[in-house]
Image (cartoon, helix red, strand yellow):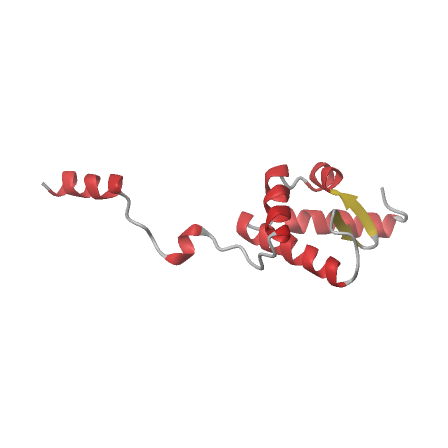
Length: 107
C-alpha cells in the first residue's frame, strides 16, 4: 500500500503509535490530524500519513483503530469540536445508585 519500503515502515509505525494511545488520546490525536489536513487542503474524508491517503474504511482495516472511534472523530470534526474530554476528567459524579449503596452500607 505504500510506494517504498521506508514509507511502508513509517506508516506501520505510526499506526502502532496511534493504537498504543489511550482511547481518549487516540480520538484527540486523530481529530487534530484531520484539522491539520484541512489546514493543508488535504481531503478530510480519510487520513493521510507520509503522503499516503487512506479512506476511513482502509484506515480502520490497516491501523486496527475501531470504526466506532473513526466515526466519533469524524462527527466531532464535522461539528468543529476541538477536543475530547473524558467523562471522569470533570470529577466523579454521584449517581442515585451510588447514594443508595452508601446509605445501605452505612446503616
